[in-house]
Image (tube, rainbow, N blue to C red; front, side):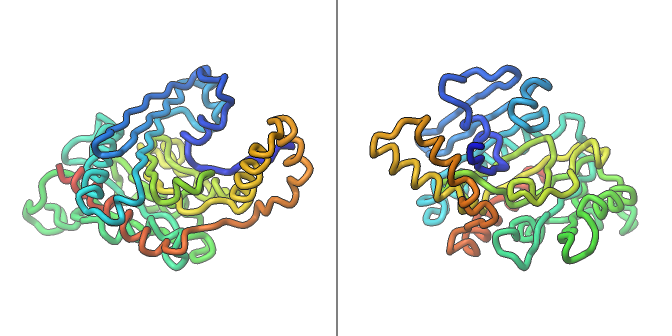
Amino acid sequence: MRYEKRTDLAIEVKESFPKDHVEIPGVSLQENYDKLKKIKVTSVRIMNHIGARQMKKPIGTYTTIDFEERFIFEQKDYMDAVGKRLQKELAAILPHKIKKDATILVTGLGNRFATPDALGPYVLEQIEVNRHLSVQYVGMELQKGMKICGMIPGVLGQTGMESSEILKGVIENVHPDCMLVIDSLATRSIKRLCTTIQLTDTGISPGAGIGNNRSEINQNTMNIPVIAIGVPTVVEAGTIVYDTLEAALQKEGYSTKEIALFFDRIHDKMGDSFFVTPKDIDEKIKTVGDMIANSINACLAG
């Protein structure tokens, strides 16, 4: 059995297909690269059940924003440019039926005490909630536009409840028109750690990328549209070993078939239960988290 690299990113699933499979039935790909700002935006659309079966992901749109680490953590102007692009893509993926006075529930998934998994809670803490300023609470209309409320459901080990169970209870009482979910993801590529943002209108399966599947959070389970924003913060240790050995074997002249046979033999020793994160993950969570929060605030306020 060939070693399978885990990922939450639809673009990486698409890239995993052989190069001679440019066209995948039921899947479309659009790319846009801004050479001046050095920002790449890729949209993967899974249009039907054939594409969903091929990609092993739900039907919907997956937009990926790739940016360069050496700029975003050193130049504020570059970070602002990425944030504005995120704001634009978020506005485009929000349901068109959402009215200007809609109620939006913003949810930060993850464990705030585990830094690689703390992106969701960190972003939520920077969100400008305003639902409590509406007329039904204050007695006078102080707030116009979208009504924003927030929720950090924690993780199963902290609460004894699935995030989906907690969110269903909130939705039944608050009646939001849409939910925006922020979470940490897993990637197949070291280069994408904290330098990629994925937006999707298919919701999210918490923990799927690391094999710790929890109840899905999507329109089918929540009964409202669910938009998910995720950033890869961990990569499987086996992936690093695989990539290093594959490059070395290719350099030595081994064929693709020989390399695949080699990995089949050592599959059980690839360390697929270990995940790696950058040593400065705390700083990266803060930098990327601030950018995401500012983009959400600007998008929902506009």
